[in-house]
Length: 185
Image 1 (cartoon, rainbow, N blue to C red):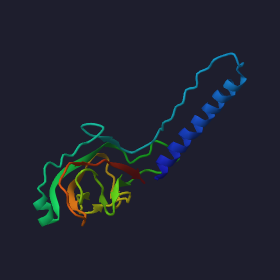
Image 2 (cartoon, rainbow, N blue to C red):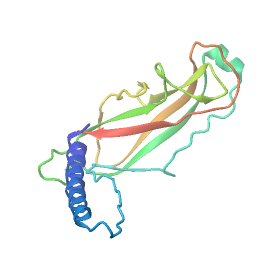
Image 3 (cartoon, rainbow, N blue to C red):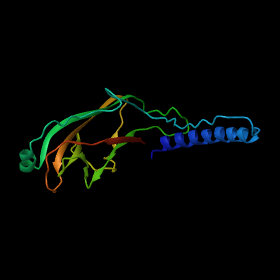
Image 4 (cartoon, rainbow, N blue to C red):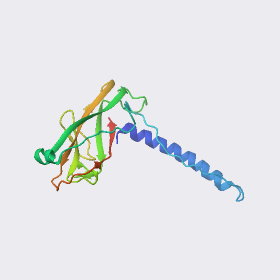
């Protein structure tokens, strides 16, 4: 995990623990006949060089209908483009003791089917492949090559496509959830 994110999470965890310890002491001192409500809370405060924006919190990429014959003949289906927008990027750290950011890495993760992203549903024999603008293929849980961070706004462009996974192909509906994380350094 990048240093900035690690320090921010550690600080938030310490502050949460101190606050929770005070609450536990207060509950222990209360007489048995008094009721109390315990409120649990968690979260994080992070210091990132960029904001991530998109049309919605969840981005849906509709692959559409792919004929079995095309996948058998070509080994893959047609491509669908999607992007991740980084906005208001600043290379200067807002925390004095942390280094400035100049580079980032993105990692896509989800159900793994070897080097492909696995699918759920009644279709089988295929997985999903993500390719960045430089032609790098994303492997589930493995960071893509480090990229240069620019001041201002950046659009990260990717291609998503169905790829045969060398198992018997069965027609049907499918879906998948793929997450991503960005680490700055």
